[in-house]
Image (cartoon, rainbow, N blue to C red; front, top):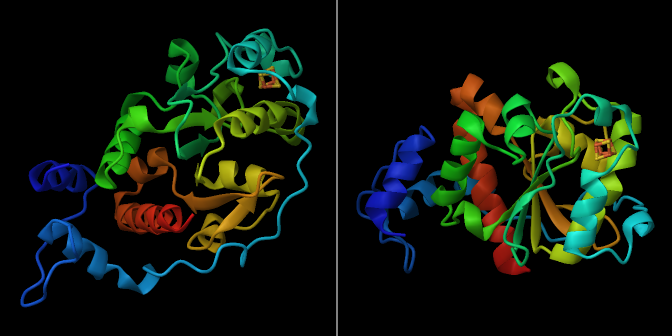
Amino acid sequence: MNSQLRREYLDALGLKSWALRGKPGLAGAPAQVTAAVVGVAAIAEPPMLGAATPMRDVSAAREAGAGWDELRARVAACTRCSLSSTRTQTVFGVGNPHADWLIVGEAPGAEEDRRGEPFVGRAGQLLNSMLHAIGLAREQVYIANVLKCRPPGNRDPNPTEAAECLPYLERQIALLKPKIMLAVGRIAAQNLLRTDKTLGALRNQVHRFGLSDVPLVVTYHPAYLLRTPTEKRKAWEDLKFARDVVSRV
Ligand code: SF4
């Protein structure tokens, strides 16, 4: 990605790019990106993998053996929880089935329920910009949610819904074998990590997900960032932190 394009994406994130005076750039990096990296150097060094949250005990056996097509068909026909009676359609996930990055949100919203695709609309556009800011196109990653059906009124998923739906995501992860999972938003992070810790307490560390032991990093949901743009810089820090983790896998 050229420097002009990357500057535009950083601008879309609300992050002012700047150039350091009198300091050389990082090898191979555009000057303004180098400056942005140095500007958040306080979290530039990820902790060692495996030094963070204990691994959760995952039961992925329910959907074991299903390939992508079979899994998609099972989700489309699923009536395991009451959300099946209120959804327009299931939202399976989208992206590159060989992606290194798996982005996981909470659940479909109204627009996602209507279109059958996760992270569309304004929040989806911001997610795309966030990904582009670290050199990734939406088509290069895989995007899914903890829940495949929309909770009415966009309420939080309840524990039964999450427990019934998680095996689908776990099978997606087993098929995908990502190098990293990016949990976006408090609800996604809490469900994936089985914790009630705040998002702030979960950021800036490398968690591990499931038996596959996939590194997992937590950041803000783009819908939250649209409401609270002052937090965009923290999201930018999280993305660079995650990118550093991937470079070490
Ligand atoms: S939310 Fe998940 S478990 Fe519930 S009906 Fe939809 S696909 Fe099935």
